[in-house]
Length: 100
Image (cartoon, rainbow, N blue to C red; front, side, top):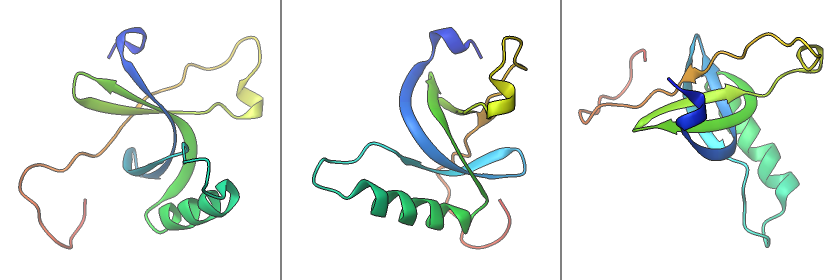
């Protein structure tokens, strides 16, 4: 994946389980919505699925990747490179229950 040639879909919260993003919720909300209430409920919902992180969602010709925001210790002059995490996209066949 070439990060420079992807389409940035904006800031999102993501539920991460293992090394996959299970679900994302965008941070962009209409101006008439209470952002703090939305933020609290979005994070609570995603916590049911996995560890919640903030970052950018990228689209690479149909494949979606999540780039987690760097933590404070990784914002130095020599930060570690950030690994994109693939977003789980179900196939056209839907199944209920079971492991992902």
